[in-house]
Image (cartoon, rainbow, N blue to C red; front, side, top):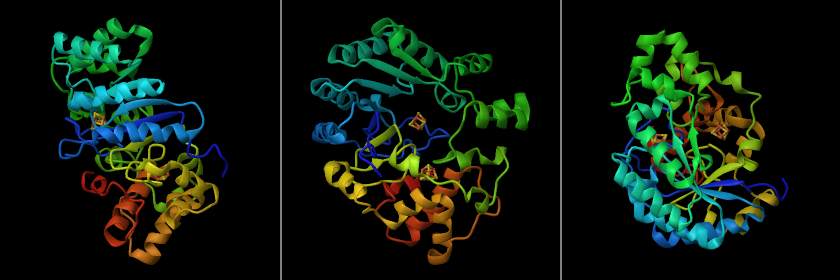
Length: 331
Ligand code: SF4
Ligand code: SF4
């Protein structure tokens, strides 16, 4: 491992895992059942700690849905701007219920130093958020920030969702009824490019074929854990690498010590196993020492295998890396 490790160029600050939605594809298992929010002083600590990355990075304020606590979101933008960190926000646009509120909030954040907005758009979001709110967020954000500072992830879904409705949430069953299961599977898993961690393996996995654990035996996670360009700090102090929801490489409050430990090869068996042997290695460990048994229906991706094994380990072992623990309750 070298000094470039654990230095994302795009750091997400998770203010809360709370969200109005409970999307079927959410890799952090967010939803309305989560309660906690980051303490205001922790925002400053987190962003100051990130300055220890030692290489340029930007921060995105995220969740859950960060607009549910506009005061904390505004504070996070202020702190990032004061520290000179480029900052954007990620939103599901569910709060964009009218033009006045949407314009008021985007304008306020713009004045505080917010540089860009990322608006989520997918069938999974649209199952909770009427598309007209997404469209309103896009238009108003473009007026406030300029069109080049508004990113939609992913814009190609706008047209398809609008063929169902822009006025109401569109359930995922409407796609299978209209396109059939095979085409819906291709749309969701290939066209969207679902990551099989979080909920998607469980909630959307029945659309595609499952594989036995051995199928993933050559997949290791060195890049995702050590060198992911996109990682998160959460409200509980967890440094979540890559898109590995529910997996913490350590506490961001003391980033220099965390990085020193990794540089010196001092990290836990669980993290080492994932880096060197991937989720199949974790599966073997869980079978031999913790009584894990493979799912008969198999796994639709390596992260599905990983989350399912971790879900077992969080019950049977004492693993400091399996955080936040509530992640495993909200699949
Ligand atoms: S994907 Fe985004 S909008 Fe959906 S539940 Fe997760 S955080 Fe909320
Ligand atoms: S298999 Fe596990 S450790 Fe590897 S990328 Fe997926 S969630 Fe992360």
